[in-house]
Length: 510
Image (cartoon, rainbow, N blue to C red; front, side, top):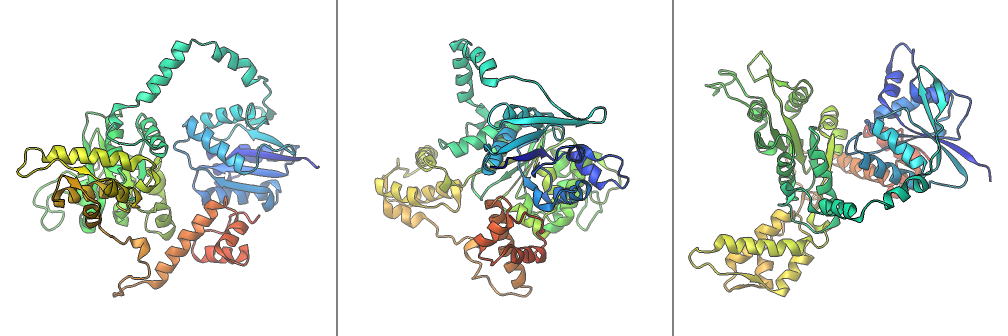
């Protein structure tokens, strides 16, 4: 069997800058390495930048180095943060395993220079453990060079670790189990929810924007409050704003304030939510519903850390941490132009993806008991109040329900059933009567009302974008595999659809 050699690297800022520079004075680390004596059978690049920006870099790299398009692969890797060691280790390991690595017939080379120091450290760890690889680096002073240092992680360090006192290991384990008290309100026992709480606890320590994604009723505001309480801004203002409830013509005034006379009815100067949250945290719930002009102002506020009230000419400095949340698919909104891509990346430094209640095994039973106790406590002492319990039949109905409204729907369904049940026990019939059969938007695409301005082509394009993006993600950005999954005859047909929908046509054809 003929052995192959693979070159694997993150794409760094210096690489992008080299491709975009008008005067080509520097090639950047990757191009410099690929122009060396060794030629690789495959160039395997990872990016946590915007995919199309890195794809343009790959096009430039092919021209500069003479590598064919089929030899250079690009993969999007979503990180909690480019300096989060755990996230980098987890995502890179998952990506390389999906590529079938390690493999006896493939020699790996990891390029250490592009990316953050955390990314470099993870390459070294992986090269010495799960994915044996040669290490190289490039620099202005020394050019391309091998990184030669030898150690056996297991034999050199594991015995020393095992010699540590059992008391210290137990103490560390117990401390990890305790968690942060600020997150104690988030009831759970499922591992999928535990993972998001752990991620939220880590990101709380960094004063960076956070984007919380999840369906309505999954607890996004609870997470935002806990992150604020666990951060260095605890004790400072915490302002929560529902962007979806602000009239579009008032959004700018609500967020950034206005001066007297700025518009009809502005009889006094008024502080906006940014000024009110100065020194603390501003929670922007349903940020995906902001109008585009307010998105522009929000981006400017995040970049410059200052706001200009409506009708004013002098900017005001603000020191605010942004936690944003939405139930919308922002990636699709970015692709369709409904949400600014630059604002999306500015907000999505720390990303949390809250699972729906139906995907949290064991949590529904826990929440049922907690909410019944809470409802009984709230009713205690009121006229005609009864202590309620729930029958096995009623509990089974609740456990089998798919909860489109998630935790919020579960609580209010129990509350309705408790109010209308005539005896001390909530029966199966009481629960059935209390459940609201709400048809979700995604289920009613064929039943939308025809009104003036109805955009059939826009709806069809949105559906197409959604499933094409899902197919590409599911197949690791492989167009041929995605085309087969979608029922297209070949990947060229998929490419034509993607071009028409402005999704880009640069995914790999293998």
